[in-house]
Structure formats: structure tokens, C-alpha cells
Image 1 (cartoon, rainbow, N blue to C red):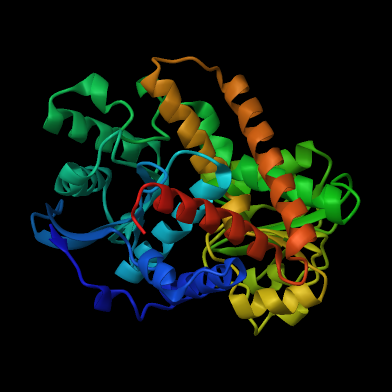
Image 2: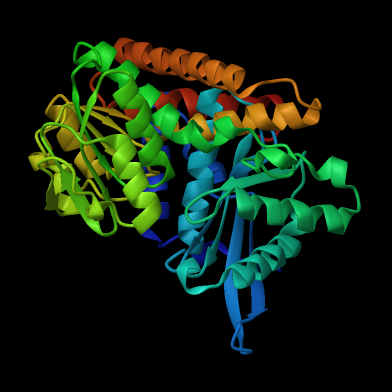
Length: 428
């Protein structure tokens, strides 16, 4: 395991976008440059080497990272992703966004994030298990229920968390103490089913509350969702239950569009059975591209796939009046300014997709107390917390920062809380 220098992440475009957002929040708060300098770097960034033996007998080496951005409010918290294009800069940026997300949610966590540069679809289940266990063993001395608490992210899931939990328990020799080292675990080993649905549920909640305050409510409003993985599927499910009409969803195979509405349950079945949502054939569905989906004439747009999909190149063509960011960093600052001038409300990622980490906190508390909540109670708590947080940010936005996109208010609240905690602890 090696700590790596700032030079290896500072030129990454995702990191630079995160720093730009931080600087804008600091300007609104009147923070000096020296505070920005402290906050733009992680407290620790480690790189690990992960050699595994493939099923064909050959050894391949993968690189992994864990960024621990800020711990002023509590243990580091954030997911681990498996993607072939993961970079150190991306991991640092995501850990910074987790700091603001946890702060804004009002939960006692700092920000962390991890990743392995790998295409998980090219590995067998056995190879994935070996990769996961060796990665977690490599970072084991830097994590723990009171130190750093990982969770799933892109192409990781409850099974991955089970491998992590088991590996960590073996290393420390205390299985019961290890229970809270990761969240979004299978229910059989301390997880909550509610955690599986929570990020999508929270993104839908943010869209619902935004619709109430911006476009007259959710009932009958049309929705397009880019990305039909865990987040997109459950966002679609709950928005439909609340009376919205989901007209388009997409995955890597493309997008399906039916202006009369898509049968969300059928689309979820098709995706689960064929791995391609474009195999959905019901109604008057039309196959379009992911890029075309973003520009559909809908009331609400949910980008729930990846970062940097809404840019200055397509912002003028986006017709939605509400955007709820299910993905991390899907809207560039330049695009956000264009959309704000058009009267579009963008519920920023650190608010809209905080359902996952908020439910992780609930699960972690449940683990530490030996089990105290049902899934129904957990979702009720999530609904109350996210509804309260949305309205707090919206009111602050309208009161102080309405000339800027909503993200300005969210960042101001989040960054201010972290800075105040750092001052109280004597760090700055």
C-alpha cells in the first residue's frame, strides 16, 4: 500500500470540477484561500496493488485506491466502485463530494471513496471474490467501524460487501465487532433491505419534493431516467407509485421511449432477465440513444448513470424543468449555469442521491445497537430526513442564493458545517 502525491490527481477533470464547486461555495461563504487549500486535498489517499490468479492460471495485477477526504464530522464514509476507467482523481473528487453529501444530510460522517481499475464483467465470480478480498485486506489497517466505512458503488453490491465483511472479520479476529465495517450488506449479516432501494428512493423523493415546490406537484408529471441500474430502477418504481408517468429509461444498450408511459415493473423484469432494457417491447416503445433521452420533452429528468452527461454542448436542448441528480456529478458547472438561466431547478447530487448514505447510517446505527428497526421504519425515517433536508436547502436557496443554481445553497450549508467542525476541533 502506498500513499500517492497530489500530482497524480490534480489534473483529473472530475477532480478539477469538484474543486471548482468548492471554490464557488467558499466565495459565497467568504472563506479565505488557505481554507480552500486545506479542503481541496484528501487527508489520505492510498494506492494498492492487487494480484489475482485468473481462471486460466495466469496472474494479473490490478490497481485500487481509497481516498479519505475529511473526518471533521466523523468516520470516512463512501462507496467502492469497480470500473476499467477509474482514476485516482476521480476517487478523490468522489470522496470530496461524499464529505459535502454527509455534511448536508446532517449525519456524523466524513467523506471517503474507493475504486479498482477493472472491468468486472470480464471476471468470473471466483475471480471477483479474490479481487475483492485482496483489495479489502490491503486497506484493512486504514478502515474500521469507527474509522472508515465503505459501501457499494458502481458494479459492487451486497455480495461484495459480504466478502469485505468476512475478510475484515478474519483479519481482526472479532466477527461481531466487524459487523459495522461496511453497509448495504445482505440482510442475513446485518443489512437492511431498505438500503438496496434507498438511493433510488431518495432520488425519487428529491424529485417529488422539487416538483411540489417548482412545477405544481408530482401527479401526472412525465419523467425520463438515464441509467436503469439500481438507482434508476427504484427511482422509477417509486415515482410511478406517487403518480408520475415514466416515459423513458436507458442503460448502456440504449434508451426506450413511450410518451404514453412505460410499464416500470416490466422494464425491470426485462433488464433483470436480459441485461438490456432495450429488449422491452411493450406498448408503442421506440428505441433512442442515451443522448436523445436527455433532451426529451419531459417535466423531470433524472440522470442516474455517470458523471458529465449534461454539458454546455447539450444544456440548451434540455427541456425538463426539474433535474434530480441520481448520479454523482452528471451536470458540469457550465451546463448548470445555462439551465439555471432557463429556469430549471437542479437538485444537486449531494442532496438528491443522499438516500443511500443516509440509509447506510441507519444500518450502521442498527448494527452498533444490535438491531432496532424494521425496513418499514427505516424507509419512514429516510423519508422524513430527506424531505426535511430538501426543504431546508430550498428555503436557504430562495432566501440567500436564488441568483445562483440550487447547488450553491447546498454547498454553502455543507461546507460551512465542515469548516465549523474543523475550527471547533482546532484543525484550522
